[in-house]
Length: 383
Image (tube, rainbow, N blue to C red; front, side, top):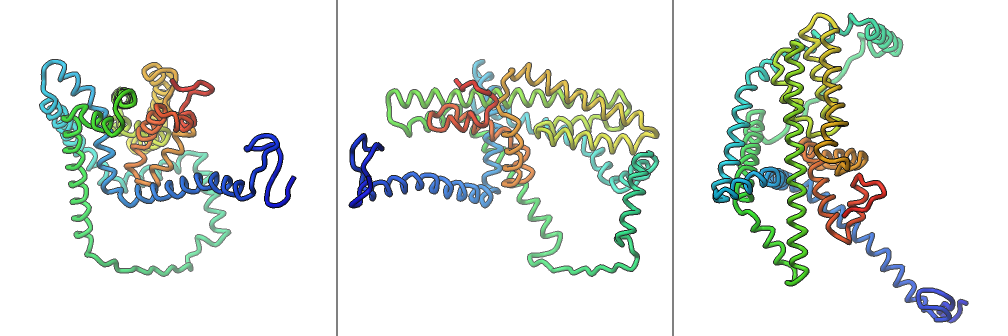
């Protein structure tokens, strides 16, 4: 019963008790305040990620590399090698391997880039000889002619706005300096993270009260690091095997510079779905531009798709386990989100970053629901 500013009945105050209307308004306001504050915090966090991308992207790359190379450093330390020495050998050995690979692939990559316009014209000319594609092109040309798009009388006005801040040389110099500073940040931050060992994990645990809670935080941080290291290391090994398999396939078919395209396939394997699509498109363009018929094209593209199918349905589940870290929707949304926030670097790091968020939320009672939404467990609860 309502009267005199009170509500009588069964509610949060108990049967037959009176709840003031002001109290109900305060309760409603408190329930609306939490989502509102969380939304404002999320907007500010996304804006901060975009604004500080030049600082946060190298830090994120260094963190993922330290998780990837951490097991190798710990393995060397078990044999008596000091952690700073092991970190230096691993980091600078990895840099040497990357530089050596880039040196081997630089000449064919530069040659393909130089010939890219002629290659595309050759591909376009060969596509016209394929009957279904030629018919579609003729239909499109007819429709464009009827719509007046192909009219020779159409004139276009081009307006160019001069941009301040120097010419092309100044922009190239600024971009080069930015890239070099980012690479140096990644290298040295990765080295110091690996050389420090578990120091930062212990320091984070000391932020919490002592006793059982601090021990539980230490255990959770160690488990998070172990799971992420295992996932990144296995995913990298899968990409290496996939790249070598693509190289062997293209070399057996006779595609020029098969090592280059095998390396591209291994690198793009870190991008789910989109990476395979871009790789098969590149392989198709290269094969069509260097072959006379469509037989080699079908062998190259079909063989690559078969390798990708075997990797996705056999190799990855066998090595990573039947339970994948993320579901398909979470993977696609992570690609869209991190690509929007950090561009190409965000697309490449999208899945590892989202897996890290999922693993962290798994070890938190408050945020375990987020882990369930991102994970691929179905009805099973995380352990």
